[in-house]
Length: 118
Image 1 (cartoon, rainbow, N blue to C red):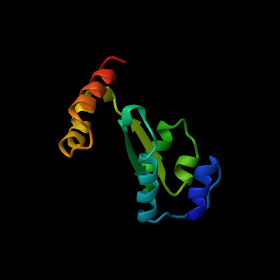
Image 2: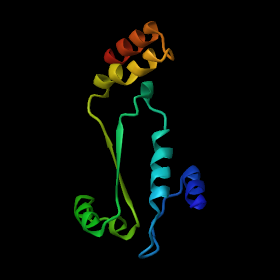
Image 3: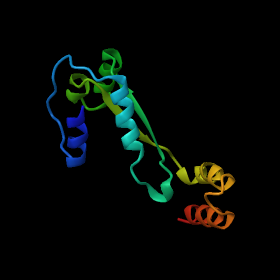
């Protein structure tokens, strides 16, 4: 699995897969954890990650992905979805940081204003 993390850092795109290979759930969780650390504007992290490792759901996904064979050939297919209107979430997402003293109310207000006026 360490090879996968090296490949991610080197931005290599796989186009062939070992048939009937599998990935441990702990490695799937680690991949998602790495992905969630990617930077985003105002640190909104306005995405959701889903993974499919079941043949039935992958068959459905292949139909939705312009019949890309890699969707059913890979051990796991990741679906990354952005959330609509992430600016609506910033106050709720930052509130715990204010409550824990990580952010001041002034910084909180500034970020919320900036995001909503973009």
